[in-house]
Image 1: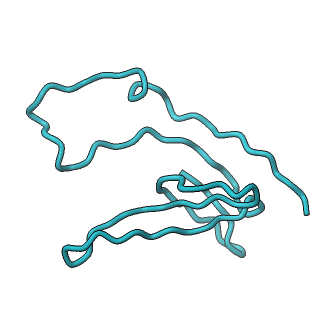
Image 2: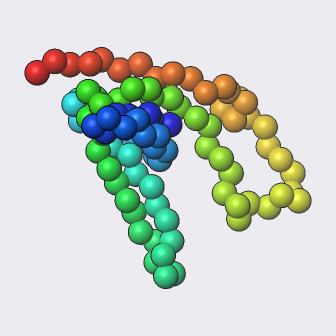
Length: 89
């Protein structure tokens, strides 16, 4: 989860981190529209990032809830704050 500043507004954003250019991060989210899978990607410059946290992946709704549940160390971890270096131009 990323909290970032856009002008005078603070906005939250969630998605998969697709890339890090060294000056900004790129988040990506896939969704289904009219039977087609589409991907939305957006760029957030380092200077606009207020807070950046890693959150565990939420299981997809299509996953079976009646089957055995696996527990792993990865799923049991608490959200962690990601560190990044702010570079000045």
